[in-house]
Length: 348
Image 1: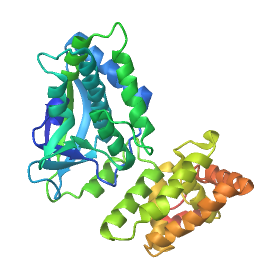
Image 2: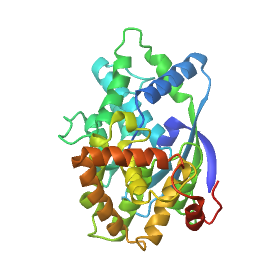
Image 3: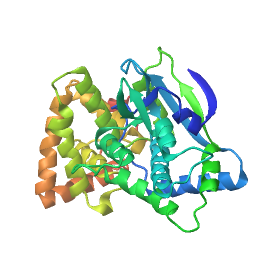
């Protein structure tokens, strides 16, 4: 593992380099608040003309790629890289509309260095996101109409930045000065480091990924290792849709798909004290996969799929499942004997 501090612009602007978000990563999730924070950080750094540290970007070289450029898999730092790219996308369109330049850099120059890359003669996005996010971002950059299926969050966050630039008091020079002051810690993994293990380790500290994020990660990795399984399309798309549409807003202490998965676990195992706090949810899910399903992920997802159908159709069933889940994630159900059996530690 090698580390160095680098300007975020220089990191993203590395020549003949494409950054990709691996399938075990979550979809883009930052909202307007985080966009506002980045905007304010840029303006403050520009006004003070002082460096501002943005955090860590951890990545590993991909074994897949283009002949003409390297591909780097981003393991940690996706949210800030994506939001920063959306800021630059909005800035690109602002320069196109106004004809302004940044110290001689035109809109086309900015896009060529920070937003697009020539990959074996094909124009590709500099940053390749997951699922719908990737197509929506590319459409935004090239000015195409969004597809029928698109990422609304990508569109909304880019529109937020563009709206700030359209204000009469917008100071382009101050923003650009601030952008140039943003720093990140560049952390590259060696060939001996396993990206998936590092990813789970990083996200077990601080603000963890949700249960849905981590289950989705496992599904996509399974599909990669088992060509033709297509568990993502067969099961996860529907589970994700039902979770987002059928979990009431008042029950969303996490994202909808995560609440649905946790409600299934709590309903299935409601007689056991499974966890002491929310950090144990995904470890328990892995234990459930290993012990009850003998590591048969398709069988687990088939059961979850059936539960999701009932969750969608039956109001009383859904309300009961959400009640079980609310108690379960607080560690209030069952006995400590089950906790000892599942985790090998005495219950509290």
